[in-house]
Image 1 (cartoon, rainbow, N blue to C red):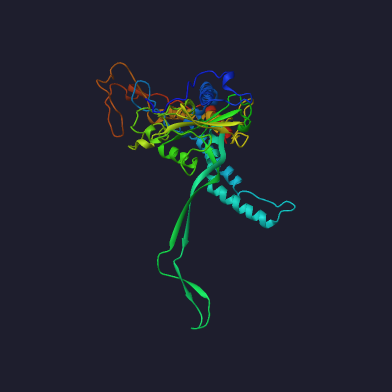
Image 2: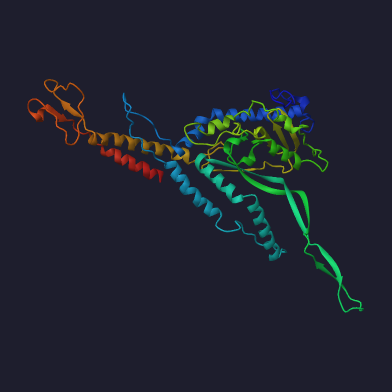
Length: 452
């Protein structure tokens, strides 16, 4: 059993009594139902579209595990040459896109407008460059480009977070002595001593901008969205998994000096009771995660809802972070609302980009879908050619049914002698080796040209 007490029935219908005249939800039970049901609908939408999106197919083609097929009725492996067309093209294109975006440092140019001096513009450029480096703007942009190239769509999240900053002040230990001739009024001079300096540490929570790449399976987008710009969505849900230490830090950054939660926040009284004593239940795996990535056949990191260490406080709990243009709601483990408040940005704080846009759709088409079939053609054709060519190095022998019937299996090889009855040329005969049709080579060449 989970230690989190549900705020109410997450699956109930929202009625007129749940809203104010301005359209605000009155109770946390209403917030819970809004977020959980919106997430469930978005997950179901992606699950129903898996054969059109082909994310799993793209994931499989990118790593392309070796096909372990055998000749019929034997244990001998068929030719299983691998082709990495999708991975090769993605890894050729993405670095060029990255270089095009970040051809200079800082990756932007500010020009002063009338009334603004060049010194102010230079100072702003330096400050913006520092903030972009602090939020790892280049790294997260590159990760997003990789996902966009492979799966067709990439999503980034931006906003303001509060970081814990320690300010250390060092003050040297000094003494004051008088200077000047004896008996003559002089000035006092401060002289440093060899004693240890006085060090003062001040802890502050300061606002900082952030910009981060989000995996396509962890962002549940409004299924009604008709265009490839996520900012036009009615609502977006960011799914995260957080352990005790992360949620504890979240609570600390949203509490006052006396430890009381700020307006809108509502954490359990004792967070550690959610982890101790350890419970066997785990956070549910997202349906979108199952539709985006292959499990078992290719290599991926372990699911975040799986325990991988002895520390029970590192177990992950699911956080649903709901955004629309009016409100922001956070739900813990689909049971408790830990934050409800106004969306201060007045817009969806996400950005998106598609490799190729689809009409009347948010999710785009990537190279896994566009050139994936060329990879299948190349690999299937080459392996079929190798099967035909293998006849030449592993020939088939024909023999007369009569006098030359062997009493056991005879294996041929260099230097071996086989005794036959009658004319040696007529006793055994090699089967004519089949030829690869020339049209196959032309089809393979055309497929490779189309990929390039």
